[in-house]
Structure formats: C-alpha cells, structure tokens
Image (tube, rainbow, N blue to C red; front, side):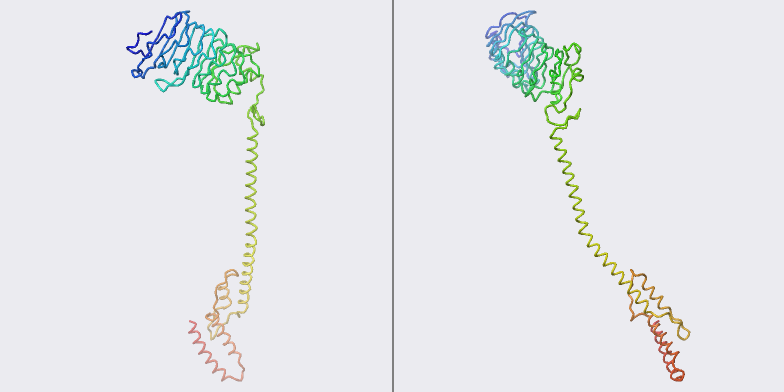
Length: 415
C-alpha cells in the first residue's frame, strides 16, 4: 500500500484478508500529517480476515504506522507472533485481537510495543486477546512484560491451560484484569504480587480444582480490596461441580482473619499483635492519667486541710472570745432601775441584750456615750440618796434637791 499519501487517511480498514502481509505493507502512510487529525476520533488500523482466513505478519509489516492509536485484528488464524512484530506502532491506546486463533507466541513478541491511556479522544490503555484460542494452551514466558503502562488486560476465552506466577509481574499499573473462560484449574499463590493498582478481577467460568489451598485468592482479594467480577466455579471435587468456589470455601476451609499476621484470631475479626499492643498502651496511659489525677487531688487536699483546720480553730476561738465578752459585759450590768421621782428608766440589761444579739454577732457598744448607762448611774445615785442616815435630813434634803437638779439636767442631756 504505497499510493495513499493524499489525502491522509485517519482510519484504515483492511478486510477480507487471507495470507501474508509483507514487510513493509503500509509504507505509503509514513508521511502522514498528524496536523490534519480530527481529534474527535482516534487514528485506527483494522485488519479483518475472511472467514477462516490466515494472517502471516512479521517485524516491519507495520513500518510507518507509529501515528496509529488503536489497532484491531479480527477473525484471523495467526500461525505465529514473531519477535518485535508490533514494534512499529510504538505506544497504542487500544490493542485487540479477537476471534480466529494464535498458533504460538514468543517472549519478545511484544517488544517495542507499549499500551497506555491517551488523553484524547478517549483514554483506554487496553490490551485484549479475546476468543482467540492459543494452540499451545499457554503464553510464552514474559510475553506481557513490555506492557508496563497498560491499565486493562483481557485474556478471555483463549484456552489457557496454565498461568505462570510471573505472567503479570511487569504490569504494575493494571487496574482491570480478566482471565475468565480459560481452562487452568489453579492459580499460583503469588500471581498478584506487585499489582497494587488492581481493582477488578474477572475469573468467571474458570473450572477450579477446589481445595482450601487452591482458593487462597479469595482471602487475598478481600484483604487487598479487589472486587471480583463474575463467579469462580469448581470442577472438582464432584460434589461441588459447577458450584461457586466461595461455597466450597465456606463449608470446608477454616477462616483465619489474621492470615500471616501474628495476632489473636477472634473470628470474624483479627486482633493483630500491633492492635493488642495498642490496646495495652492505651489502657496503661489511661491508668497513668487516672493515677496522676488522684495524686494531684490528694496532694491538694493534704495541703489545704491544715490551713482549713487552722482557720476553723481561729474561728472557733474567736467565737469563744466573743461569747465570753458577751457574757462578761452582760453580767456586769445591774438590774433595771425602778425609776427616779416617779420616772421609770428602761431596763439596761435588756438594752444590752439587744446590742448583743448573739455570740457570733457582737455589735459595737460605747460605754461612755450610752444613755442607758447614764440612766443607770442616776438610778444608783437616787437609791443612795434614799437610804442616807436618818439624822441628816437637812443635808439629805439639800442633796436631794441637788440630785433632782442634777437628775433633771442629766435627763435633759440624755434627751
């Protein structure tokens, strides 16, 4: 094909193929002007064989096709995929072989080819071999190794009788993986090692020889949060033929939630040694905190109690002093006077009691300015005048007059 330089075809479809595509078969497209690409559509090359047609390709068949983004081969009986057969494509957004069959693969069949997600028009990063049985029943060791940036791998219904442990070891960015519809009966227990980006796994219609050691992957997928698409089924033992492998596992295999982690198996949960250590540290920290709080409060209490007791003693002593003072003052006050010249004075003791309401509430009392005490003094003087000696009447009368005058003055002053 050497006569297609103008116009530049963005999508090329070659159909009814049967035979050999020589090297180079597409040299006429080597000068493709990528500036004319309609970014709403991918650049595509599709080869479709006639029903039952063969396809023989080799390194260099696709020279000049490095601008292609998506590549399809359909319904072709491919005798062999030789080394570097797809290297001229460089990096593809989408690669698919569907239908027909593949005679053999080589370790370096995909050398020079990579598959990655393109930014436009639709990011895929997909590699598919679907419904194309492998005549050898297996892929060559390291066949998928060049696909280091692929995100989706589908090897569905291609007649794989076995899968190597390192088949996907270099496909570390793969998110979606399908190995459904193949004939292998068990998986190596480290086949998913390093596939940290894996999110979805399809193993439907795989006839597993179910045993507790062969269904190990269920626990692994749960532990690594990988979703299973479809159902893995048992072919053996016969009691579980065509039943879900999960049923066999639930009925026959003891579950260890700890797996390989040291810890306490408390089905359905695992308390790892790190969790147990964390619990112990947490409880110990809580105990230390409570002890510290107790010691703090106890220390504050021991510091505060002597001070409180001293203040209480001072208060009690002050109350006793006030009580004694109250009793002493009250006892020194004479009874209320009956009066002078017909004038009755108020009871001084009662007045004093009014001033001293209670031992705890002693009010100030000024003896020098108290009208009650002055009245009491006058009463005492009147009493002394009344009991003067009988023979001294004149003196007594004079003193009485003087006392009356004094009394009147004193009462006037008192009023």
